[in-house]
Amino acid sequence: MAPLPEYQPKKLSLGPLETEVLEIVWKLKSATVKEVHELILADPERELAYTSVTTVLRRLTDKGWLRCCKKGRAFYWRPLISREQAITLKSYNQLHRFLAISNPDVVASFADSLDTASLDQIEAIAARIESIRRRREEQN
Image 1 (cartoon, rainbow, N blue to C red):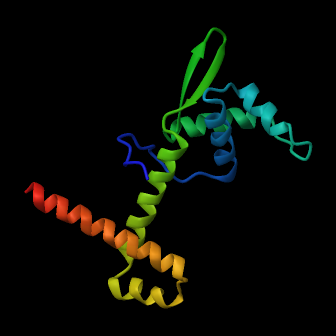
Image 2 (image 1 turned 180 degrees about the vertical axis):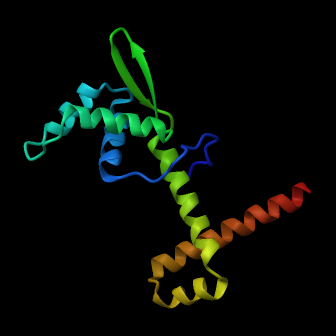
Image 3 (image 1 turned 135 degrees about the horizontal axis):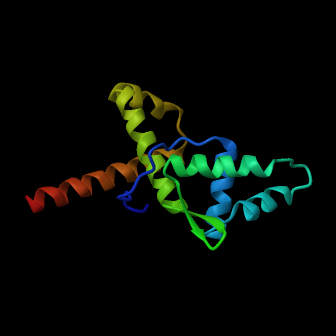
């Protein structure tokens, strides 16, 4: 997994429409309201006002996910972090929330209900943590 990015959006939680719009901007790398709106409406089952797309793009900008810049008469939005960086940040925050409310006995009690692949992952994580600790000790 990628290292934790230096920049982090102000608010990580996103609604379903915000997530959909962000996915479109990631795909296009830079997008106008019109481009995002057209891609959403490419699904004949969807209805969404142009102004709603504008609102969502502004909300994503306020939350720190996008940056808006004007080129000529058009406004373009582009992501401030990549999809991979977002996954890393969300995973990191989920882990910290889990560890903040859990104690080792609670976490260990889940082991009985895990399948072999999950247990192998936990063992791999533990080995990686041990390796990091050894490197830190060697550096000190």
